[in-house]
Image 1 (cartoon, rainbow, N blue to C red):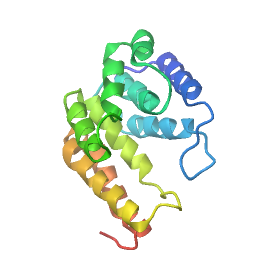
Image 2: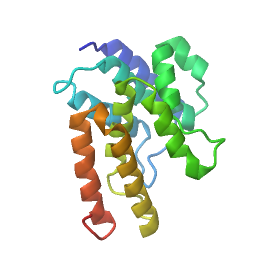
Image 3: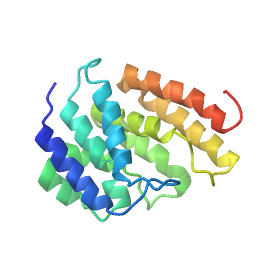
Length: 181
């Protein structure tokens, strides 16, 4: 297991600066709490599995910077290296595509990356399956759970511990929909 607290601190600072005053949707929490929680999901399985912890955690901390901030891929490459930049790019939905094609495209790009990138997407969805924003309709919540099932199906083989945790979160999410399926 390779892991550098210095790299973690650099990535966390980069993400905090890039996300600035953004908030987790539906909350008053600074957005940096989301990416730190995704990284925590990765760290939680580091003793149960053998993988490049530093690559996975760094990608987890930076996973939304290209999609949601003005950070550039060149900047990420310069500071964190090519493998991190490729991982973050794969984890970013392509806004040029029609909305209904974005997840399939992102999953296909993630699957071409090392399993550490797969793990970040699993951890991201685990984190996102907490209580949905109160303004989401029942239909949006159902669609979100179905999307989580697609992620689990496509990327679950990347990490048995994260797949198991995501499966449990999907089941529990039924409580936000009004069912248990």
